[in-house]
Length: 473
Image 1 (spheres, rainbow, N blue to C red):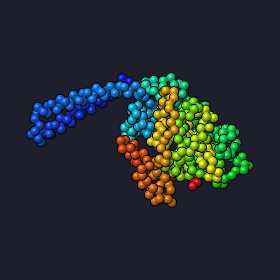
Image 2 (image 1 turned 30 degrees about the vertical axis):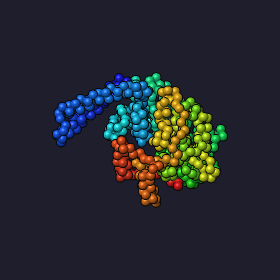
Image 3 (image 1 turned 45 degrees about the vertical axis):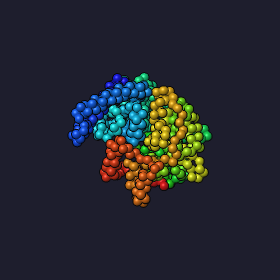
Image 4 (image 1 turned 90 degrees about the vertical axis):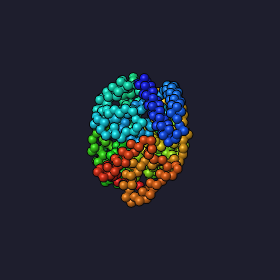
């Protein structure tokens, strides 16, 4: 792999040299044609001088490449290609590293993926889904790692993080992995188990109603509204419901618990968790730990979410909330966390306190905002995996706003019929100095694909973008 990178770099430099010489010939030929003052002898001298300078440039460039290549890292990402993954890949490559991706999929072919990938992305592997075929997933990764030299493997989504944590010891024979051990990841992933453990140890968390069957709920004094969510898994569209009375609770409970899963370690619809509803905005504490020690932290507020009642961030703003950092730090130290994670809380409108909603044991979907605000959690996670540690970093831009235009902003406009025109007018905020989007002029293909995919879903798959059950505002 190292030799291949060196050869590629030299060929790139030679191509630039040839292109430069060609442009010089055309330029000087044009000059001689337009002006009688430039003689053939002078033209030859100018060309020789130009060639000499470019050869020097080639040699210097190759030396600099070799010097810089000492710190080069080759990173394998395991996840589908989302905006957060694309952002991390761009940041890696712009800093002199390289990144490939292994995409878990039901269909083991590249399909149209090869047409909308980022220009910064190297190889693309399609591997078996750990949800459907965990053993094949493991074997696919072992085959890739044993055939290629990767400095680190970096999972992004919940599914890939849990699946890699489970086989961490086997994969570690070939590469470095900077995530927590499986028993800790599994604890964090089980929302009900985590909430009950934290409650028993004095942490402020929403009330969880314990029960054995749906019939037991009739005998429990429940304070409505409540949230019904699957204990394991993510995705507000299929895993979260709200209820204002027992009839709605029973209906939504049956809806969720009737769903099936191929892997209960990743998604578990049996006996959904029933949790107190906390009124207020969603705030995120974004953390990076190295074996229980905090290395970086940032806070943000989800100004707009999709669905509107609460979900992924559509418009996020960086904030500085020391109490949230303290709250999240104490929880993560208690569970002996290692690696990146997102502590999702609500600031309770009733008492102003932070209440834990859940912890996402992974790099978050709004990673691009974190990187552009000043902390590259993805790179620092790799540094911990490869070097054993990373520098502490807590400085970032506060008040930076990020709008995820496609598909989230458009889906929110489509969903919120009553405020549709108001939301359309807010799109023009993107021209303000402190507002960012996923648009990258140097890498347009992913952005264009997201536009096409957004309107394709609106036209042909509206059921995917409309909320399930009651909406809370």
